[in-house]
Length: 613
Image 1 (tube, rainbow, N blue to C red):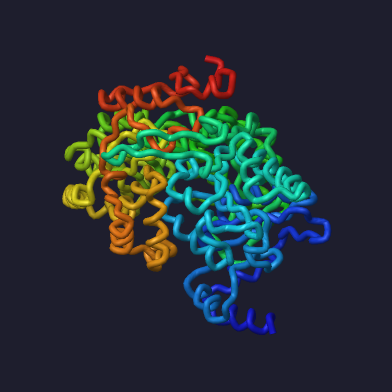
Image 2 (image 1 turned 90 degrees about the vertical axis):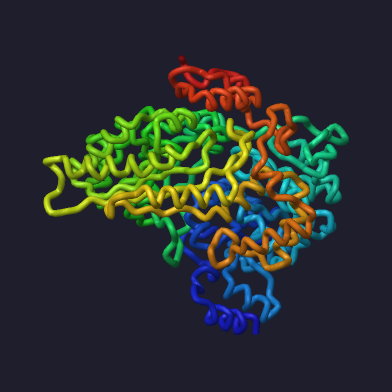
């Protein structure tokens, strides 16, 4: 009967391949030999989650422990949600088909603030109480990590434990500790408190928050000897960090169906809006030889026809030329394409084009971020207009006829001339194309402008900044559209509604838990998708929780104010962030880390200089 119902459910959904499992290189284990079961949940669809490198790495590292079985689970789409409700079924993992409530640990990766309601959704349909305070001895312990865990407070009501920083080592330590706790017969409370003693693990229930009459935080105090601050975990050598030799090969098309190799972690640039550039410090690179070996293994085992060399800024790899040369000794013969998705335009060269287009010429995307030099200096982008033009000239001279440019609007100190400057820069690139004698004959140019709404994020110099109001974003979007004078330029921009909610959740405190729960109970699922997002539903949830969302998103914060994440230590000194914000307001740039140490605090955190400079 169970198989018959499952078949009926699969026949009723648009993409049954999301739910059947059984893919090549899936890991199955003998339950009689397993002491701990970990359900790794990605709070989005199968296609999104199976494209994410982090879940592939941690699936490999946890399953390397013989007595631990890590299984995968993804958020079911609306059609499968209906089937689960119709047949009173619970959400299950792909490997064993067991419901989430049967696991010891249920872990979520926090990649995007608008996925928060999907966490509640997966817990709920997986048979686990949504609120951590309502879980009992027989319920799984719910953990979460990833970039959004750097401010875990909005999820404090729902997540038992947060994992801060790099997960390769601490996840395995937690699994081994959990096995020991089970064998000792520890209670749920004893287990949680013991886990909080593992470096890099944060137990929010051990920290009490008091608020001032104006809503700001008055005091955040640890209880019962809990650590203060809680320090993130840091993998000291990326070259020695574990990396899978094969990936689970999806049975349906996913967003990024390719071999992905993380070539470096961290960033030297210090762009003041970029959260990842700060929370992933220090800069660590894999050796060229290690990258070559990993890429070769992945392609041989998974049959991939493309390798993506991924990082925050791949062109900053100290052995980039050697790495590409090593890869080209076999990729061209095997018809394997090389993709470098994170190239800076100031490092773009004819040599890079020659080495990355042997098999296939991919599209070109650059990120000037701002339309004027003054504003690029404010955000510490450290590229000039001449470098932007030069990079485009190199591309056009090599046969490219299209380029995509990423910008942001609403950046600190932004003026109308900075918005107009986006259109003017795009026009200069169009004019450049038609001025080149070596441009492709008979082909027109296409310059696509994609503009995101700036969102202030924790652990950046702009964490103190007020986000633009929705009205101001819309005004600036209209100004940009009216400033474009050429049909060769197309403009797309992000919704200010979603950016506003993201900003609220990004800088919020644990009082937001009431609103997140209210939104979910009102139907908020897949908020990061147009099909799921409802701005009115979120405003209703904030009102029901007695919360003014503008307090979190659109308020300038004093540098002395206690932030909801100030008790967490990511190695970045708050005084440094405040000083960088001061330099931003003066449009002063800061040199890259490999040229001059700016004293961000990470060198003291790791106990050594990041670079020999």
